[in-house]
Image 1 (tube, helix red, strand yellow):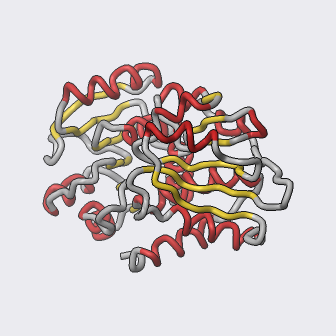
Image 2: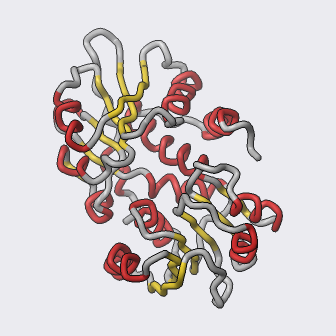
Image 3: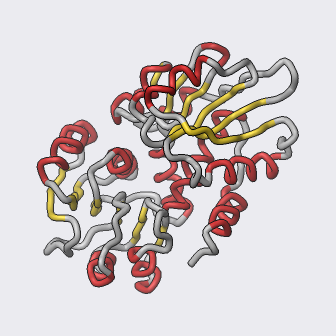
Length: 290
């Protein structure tokens, strides 16, 4: 599993007039903080005069035509919902993106396009920067595409047992069961929105955007040593607040957004950017770190 992102390598497409274009695509897209994050990275890297990053409202039926209409100045695209599955058909997908059935990064790669999933490295990297380099057990909230990426990330960190809390156990088994077996993670299941009668775990990752009741959030963080709420729709969420109050490691959807962007920036520009200026800019846009 490890090292798959590096297989793609930097995929910079040189333009005849010195301009390199990137953008985020999705629907809806007006709320996206990706332009802010990538543009700030270009400033930090000293390439803002040569690189631009925009946003475009694009749905699944429009994606192929959008990509086909991009000129030689285009280097890469960040793709969010609802494009992550259809993106796989537009280039050579990495092993990780194929296994997850989800890509979030398109690299034009001089006419030999590549598709990657940097949500996994974003999660792993954010945990590592917070001092959590490994874990053996986890609570995982949700069963959608982000939950699948989270499960992959947890497996890379060493997790071998995970309790999945989801609204529908049948849906969770269908989405995560085979992936868990492939990754060597033993999965158990319980209802979302409750505090399970379960042993303590090392980490909790929530991929559910619906808010939790404060007493449930408080009960969940008492079971773990680190909490990562991978959504930022309602930042700070009840999980964010509860983890902070409990004094455990607390990571938010901004940490994931910046984490996956860092790998995209590396793949698109060939340069590594420090995370802190990007985190500062994104948190500032949401009114501070809560």
